[in-house]
Length: 70
Image 1 (cartoon, helix red, strand yellow):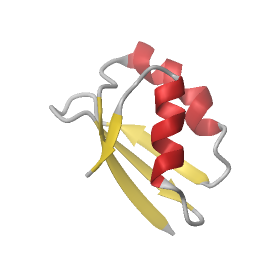
Image 2 (cartoon, helix red, strand yellow):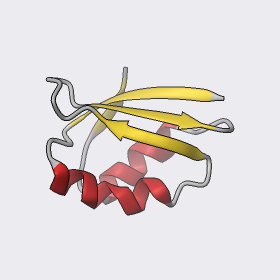
Image 3 (cartoon, one colour):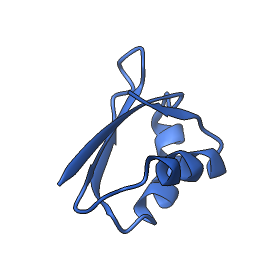
């Protein structure tokens, strides 16, 4: 199992709704959550198998958001 954390600009429930279909479309992701109450808006992803950081960033960019691995 793999856990990745990203600093994002996902800041509200509407943002989470916008990224949900993009993250849910990645079959490697088992679960994910965004801490919108934190300054860095951390996205934590748990994956069953090896997940490409670039793939996550690309998916978020398609939804109109930015992310960088922490």
